[in-house]
Length: 255
Ligand code: PEP
Ligand code: MN
Figure 1 (cartoon, rainbow, N blue to C red):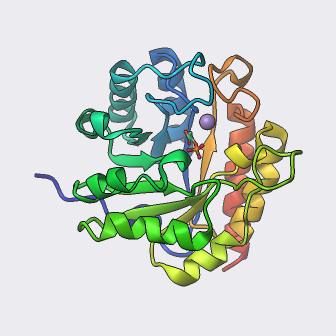
Figure 2 (figure 1 turned 30 degrees about the horizontal axis):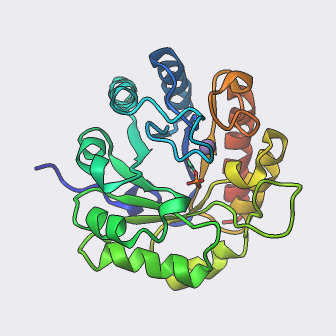
Figure 3 (figure 1 turned 90 degrees about the vertical axis):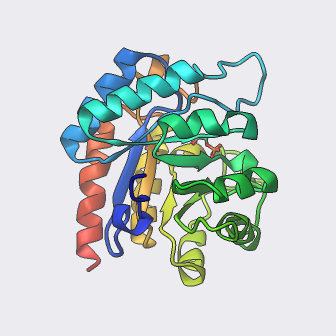
């Protein structure tokens, strides 16, 4: 069996690393062009959902196994790693076959039985904060994974529900320093889901870097307007490249 990936090697202390890719896997062409672009910039980890937790059951639910295959092929071709969401225990073996890192979505942050199951697997787990969870609850959720033996965990602040309605969620920037004081895991920020609108994604990204995040997880799409999910918040390649370059500069200026 191959060596287990170490999250601290993917997200070294004092650096900013990127996870990028579309909200959902839609086609081979979409994923190939994204992987080509991202790997060319130096991004090592590609995201993309094959099982999508959509609010309405009529909405596009993802390509399932076909989507996983598309991600795996493109990542292998361009020398990248895959992170993709496992929504339920039923698909855990299937997702494990194709992914390098399991993603636990916001809605499953306190699905303790799923957390215990990924805790028994030999792949890192990227867990997103439940949008109704306190930082302490988020931390306790990671303990359900680590207690089973898997301590290769990446924590993602992705916004919480507040009374504010001008953004989709409220990015809790304080969670970055608070979590970094509590755990040794990489703490990263997803600026896309709290923003809800692509024009806010750059600002939230820079705020996260300034707050000391170890990485950014950003939704990028070759043609965002035509995306099958989260079309309003996905950035195009050009905007992503600008965020990428500026974030590296900000991080450098902090040393
Ligand atoms: C995602 O990152 O694909 C996603 C669905 O986000 P969240 O679980 O944070 O809503
Ligand atoms: Mn999304």
